[in-house]
Amino acid sequence: MACAPRLKIGLSACFQHADSSRPLFTNKTLQYVEQSIVHWIMSSGAIVVMVPCPTGETARGDVTLQDYAQWLDGLVMRGGADVWPGNYGEEPLRAEWIGDRVRDIYDLALVKAFAEVGKPIFGVCRGLQLINVAFGGTLYQDIETQHPGALQHRDATAYDQHFHDIQIVPDSHLATLYPGVPRARVNSIHHQGIKRLAPDFVVEALSEPDGVPEAIRVRPAPGRGYIAATQWHPEFHRMGSDTLDDTAILGDFLAACQRAKVYPAQPGPSYEGLRDRAKRLLRSALGGDRTRST
Image (cartoon, rainbow, N blue to C red):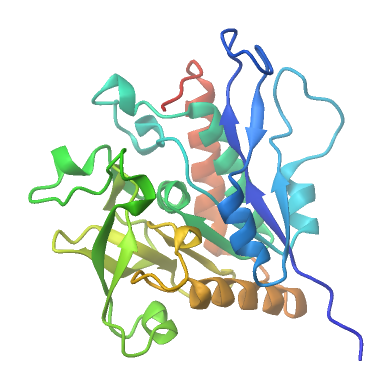
């Protein structure tokens, strides 16, 4: 019996902008991925394709993000720099929280391209924040200074070895993936987070005890494909550790990708708001200078 074709999963790119002081690839823009998330997706047999940004000073040809959305079976939006506060109607409170507006433009266009053809989307860390903003939500620019009683959600020294507990919302889809697991331990590597949830999304997990949303999912409806995200990094889970096993989360996303191949979603009015909002956010981001955070 012939094996089913492997799923082809797109992965958003990170950026290092042109830097004249960098000794390697001096003054060149780099688009790259970190290998943990690649290997995580590959662990279930899927093929991973980094989706490069097709625009920029060296752009050639006519390949678009829409071409990738038609060809690939799903998309993972990965972590990285802050989201520019202007994308949700705020001014940066500190210079170091200004984010990467170039990457925002690319990420917003990428989510729009895949959502419009009904391909499943899964977000990780910044990916969750970007999805929330793209669909009309807002963010805390810095959880510790803006959220009363907040936990420390990021420790630059400990990085992926910094953890906190989450409560999984009862009767949520995430709860069905982890039956009998009302609470779990996850890594925490972020200082921004959801302040106002995007319309048509539900929260599936909250950090304890401060209640910051840690997992979200779009409500099922005609014309909507699979969109879900976690604030933690499931790809950093280590086998045998006491953190939440990532297997069910990845399996759920890839199963949605497989279903979408057989029964493609037929996007309709549900994404009209995203189209309009994406246009406004892209115009807003294009109106300013390129900035980035580290």
